[in-house]
Length: 196
Image (cartoon, rainbow, N blue to C red; front, side):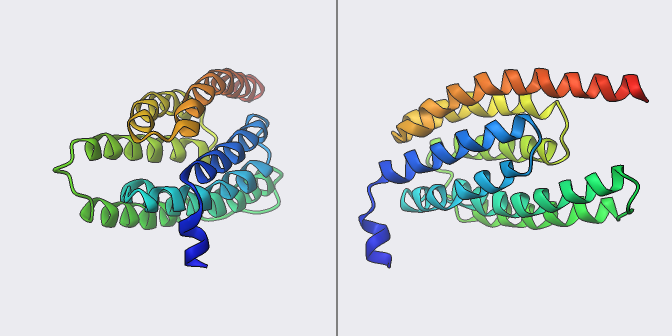
């Protein structure tokens, strides 16, 4: 199995992860649960890609994203039932536990990263911004979209440096889609306020 994985060209991992992300965003705009399934599907190729490049913080981020994906999928289910008045749940505990584990993973990956390499500081900034954006997305807050745009700008610079060309090109697509997503989610927020 290891020999099979090591024989995979990095471009296969790069492009397959990018395709899964693009499909996931289609569902994210509508706040549909299929977003989480497709987003989670992108994690394995990206994890393997980043491990092969010894990009530990980005590899660790994929593990965090899996936690967020499983957490977010179930959390959206709980929130829908809460909004229908079917149940109440301990929101603080649900939101807190995944973040505590994710920050622990992030801390470990920062610890094993060599910051003598200047580009690892860009990787660090990219991961921090993506964690913040993902927090807002998990809660379905509109401000998460402009944070994703900042992440896309950092990502374009970083992935251009690493020659991960699908990820590089994906940053521009994601930034454009984020503008659209931001507009749609702000419209939803205004609608909720108007109905309240």
